[in-house]
Length: 462
Ligand SMILES: [Mn+2]
Image (cartoon, rainbow, N blue to C red):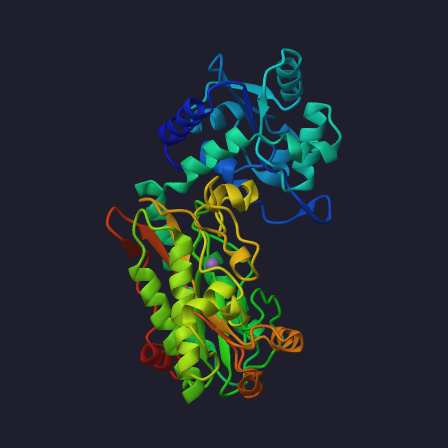
């Protein structure tokens, strides 16, 4: 974790932003996998990590914004547990690490919350996404579980989003460390993705790199020759010559900051002419989008620019037709890119998504579109210095979507359905990098990761 001063300053800023009431920050408990004592690897809640930093289960914090009291709740280790866990720090030691003085047993939290409620004071918490946290909040509030989510505090959510959106220099260092590990994973996959190997062999090797570098995966790796399935968790295909593997992976740094990088790898080491055309289009689109990153520009405008770039290229390939701007305004290009151009990145790979995507990526003035494709854009609002974002255009040929749109007669003015028949088994291509918004533009984070067509071919052909 960072120095205590970092967490003290973050909590002070939160206090000033929110103003009054009792803030309750719940850390995570262990989460059983198949029986109580066999648990998933522990992952702390990211908002708790941000304000408290303590990476252990069973902790909570209250910030009394009126009195200034800050209390860490938890339990000192059971002396007998030392057999299983080895020596563990006391609650007091933990409090010192995060710059807090006052501690209390876990049981005391209920009384603190109930006292605030009885006094009619606002009890502020962020939306729970784990069942255990939801039930704990229900218990603390004396509410039905179904009522808890609606009592999450928009003012607290807004303050947390405002703070976590702007990455400090020390956070950027950790994100770059995560991207550096992720770069090794990408390079290794390019070297190992040979005809005859099975996807899981590559996925397993990549996961090992994350672990060996002191972190874990930030999300389940996508490594698939079925790249048109956007979040494909299946690793059972054998790599065949002439196929492409979409590889979207990210490591966490030891401090839980994440990387999120995608490359598309030609199996056998050479893209065929059609693959080259689409790869070049996606890469040029990404470069155009990256060049447009600067403070004050709405990310939805960069998304639109990227979509127009793709549609223009698809027209040149004979797959789309008509006026490019009209086609994109109508959403016809979403047949090929049905998702958003990118998202924020930080302690979460989709940073702060648990707080509510519309709080993170939208504002009162910039509302989410209901249009297919555009409605999946996670980030729309204007960029600010200190934002860390992904830029990840792609082109996908999704047979089920092509068939449905064709049957519905959708956008026949903009799409050459007949010509798409020979592209049904093409798969997909995505290229993704992580970018810091600076005062004047954007800076790619981490080391250069091969993406020029000839560099990727060179690595993939050994
Ligand atoms: Mn991403």
